[in-house]
Image (tube, rainbow, N blue to C red):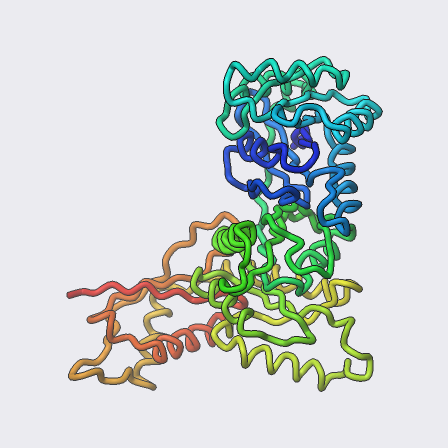
Length: 450
């Protein structure tokens, strides 16, 4: 396996870097908005448009005058991206022309001695191509007039990029990407999601601040631990819809909800000091509605005063968290400190345990005996003049390559509507007595024989 070459997209705020990133990877991953500074973290994804695939890195706007507290960290993230890049794309805005920030950045890029292509963006009509001539003053030989929003000039830009990509020997051309377990780190703002990822990675990969809403995109971060590949999905904090006061935040929340849907395992982060809030419950509800494996992480253990960090404290936190998230009863609870890294090993032990339990299955014969015995011991209630009857049950074959598909059972019954939520939970509990299914929801699919 050989790592794909890397192309970094850099430039000042609001020149269209994220639009170009989305165009190259053919997905709407980065949030595109006319508000400067929307992208703050590095976003990473693969481009397979041309004949030579490569990894694209989108960066926050450099030398931004907005959100001054973040400016230095955004610049650091962009510098890291340039350090790791094989090719750099400097994006400029044809409407603004060359600015002092562009000239300063160009000087910095020349010092890298790496191939640099100047992409002059927002050229939506052939008559505007004269605007690219001004960017020749930056001193780079290759200039590409493009419109990232409309796809104009992208194939020509790809050809320029591919000329600079490292060439491998024929036996190294095939890039095999190992399957990665997708872990979505979700929660309300400022509970420490990005800090948790940084603690796992042991570096400041994600911009961290005590200002709620620092993370705006859902950021995919590749990670390897003990020979196993993961993708850590850092998501924007989810706030109540009534408090989402900008369109950027609304899009961020939508991305977080999509991240839950595409994750293999969701890690719900709650604050040890605040406990489970109503918004935590709503996010947990999204996880439940998507039938996702889940781990609840109670973060900020370091902020609890030392005298309180005794067994009684842990029992109290665990009890309160379990009581408030009773509908996620299958989810294990780990108490950690992202700041100190305390108990992070337990988190990955829980992840491995979920994977092992997801591989378990119950044979059709034992499953039917188990459910029939459960129903004989505690018959379902009569609704009207009818009672729920189970005719036959079988476990549905797993299709997930990662082995984390929740256990799903097909139940052939008389009338599906007669199965109450209470009785459904009862049948689930009897199945868990047999196979536990740690961290996994149990899914029943009902089919009527009538």
